[in-house]
Length: 231
Image (cartoon, rainbow, N blue to C red; front, side, top):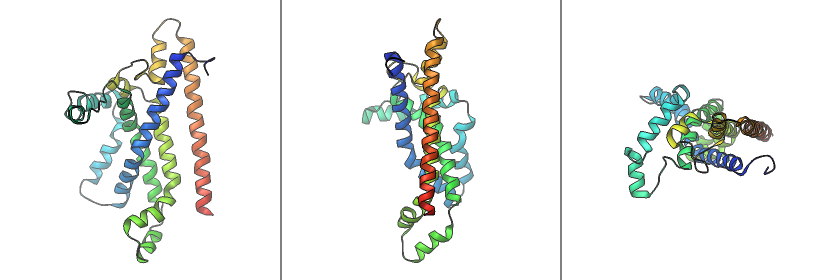
């Protein structure tokens, strides 16, 4: 790869993978929990919660990034608290890029998992409960194995979204080489300087290759999980 990309470009690629993987790893448990709440419970305001979860899909990414900046920035209500008490800073850090990417991909993850939950035969869960299994036991022994293909699909969708996220990320954490400059930001930078077309093309090819690899891996994993369930 060093023969194809410059050290700065390799840094952008590795940072993008780090950001995307962190975003998926942190948001996946929350995504499963949120999908279960939206699929299995009924309460006043569920429609509003559903709308809030999917809001990043319809808001301009710059708006999402600005909201993150005023909330999680050093002077934001949440950001100031985290900085003062835990020393955790998101703004203009790679962790902020992971946060922004995770939020932008969260709706896609939740939707895929929720659709999988909606397709589970509730009679299987009822039968397990009738045999004495507690609700957590029913979820982990019956429901979770059945929705694994949906979880895999949701995780890959969120990963792909995180890989290509630009608007919210650059608004929240800027475009700092080596710290917050992801693939999308690096490509944008190359397009703004004379003679940067070659670098932009190289990173574009890398981005396409990574996305295709993720999609193919998701398809293979989903097929294997589905085959195990059928078996």
